[in-house]
Image 1 (spheres, rainbow, N blue to C red):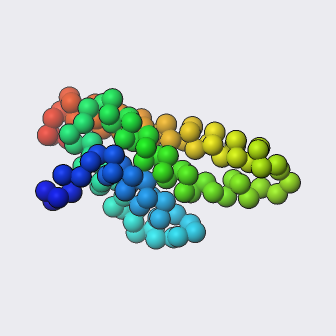
Image 2 (cartoon, one colour):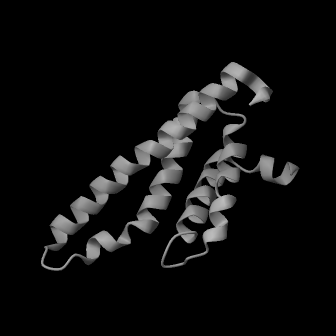
Length: 115
């Protein structure tokens, strides 16, 4: 466990995003969803609420980039519209992961090790 804690929080956040991406179709390794939050929680353990939002947002970016690839497969639309709708969706939906990271970071500050 010491090795995992020595990894950078950004790397752990990226691992969370990758694990969530792999747990959804087309990869369909759904059992990974049970473990996907663990690296982010470890990364948030030693960071505050500001860094928590950033780390959560990074996880959300990785996850939504990997799982919303079907938006570009719309038929009858131009590349510019498909790309802008995908980028907008990715940036917007990642906010929810950021809010989750913010709440965990804030809870860690308020409650300490009891969380």
